[in-house]
Length: 478
Image 1 (cartoon, rainbow, N blue to C red):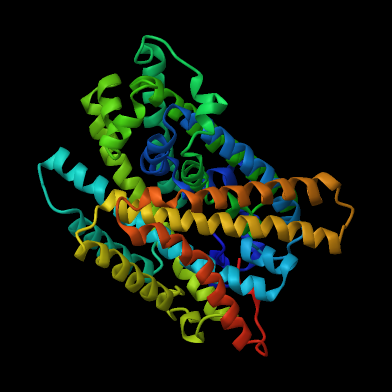
Image 2: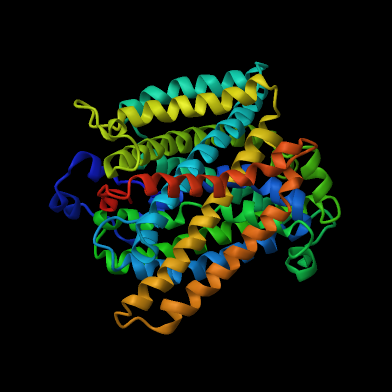
């Protein structure tokens, strides 16, 4: 979902200098995986999948991995033909035209707002738990959300980021902490003294909750499509980007499938739904306490907070640059497309981002909403649905692009794989909408939140119809 301008586009860095220190395949994989933050996704999204699919969760993640691999076939083929660091929106423009591109831009804007706001909710929950666990401090989640926003906004305004090394250390520690839990479960055996593979059976994977379960599972991979964004910062991008895309998907898929399989067996396939439903933000930590020990729970509490903090800062910077890019491209007011004279940061975009998040999160705080079941679950669902729509449109764009310009591409890459991906995304979108009422929790309006996604696309089409005589620079959007 990282369809924003890369850092070098903001700063105007000399490309020859970038090439001299360019990343290889391993570096790009590491960068993208760190940006996604698999530990945060594992502790945030997988409880929702467990609630919906129970023991079938590992199978759902395996299905999501396969779908992303198929999607990647056409996506990276089009990426190889991109002269700029293009992302989903630029690809949609290439295949479906400017009107579709503007509609996609507004869907992406909604997606960023929804996902970033939801992450503040889940981060506040884990920060609240950590403060209580480590220091005995008991303050409401809203306090922690506002404090985090107050700390992150100046950092984003001044374009302060965690360095690649810090992000790398956090990534290694976080993934290692979960893998230690996996090994402990493997050594000690599951809840029944052994392991069951029924979680991969079709009847459990394709159970009643598959619609939303697949949505949250697919959402755990969001960011893998960002590899083309770094095409100007890697060696031999025509080879590096495709390799890194596939490796990233496989690495994440193995991590999610293995870890959910282990946790499911540790709790028990007959109990996992109830346990996840009763304590969605804490049951994995409880498993860690039972299998590794209380000290490991404290370590996980610290790592999940630092991981989320890094992801929030990175995501805020990404959204700020996206707003900046839309202003520079002529889709949003030109004022938001200005950069700071001293810091070269999209400072107005960062202010817009902070105000938007404050309004959204503040509304949930004032309504005394549940930060996990409402703020996080509702908005991550809306954001993930937006990503599914963008990826579906991108798959269709691949087919249309190669239909007009075959360029020697084989039928699997140019047609079959993207068509399969598009159909799968359509099915996922339909199932998600049909099951969206699960998230309402008795709140009638919540089951209609999905309408925001197509509504944002319609707004984009209306905006474009009023700007039809204006030149738009989609080269500035990546």
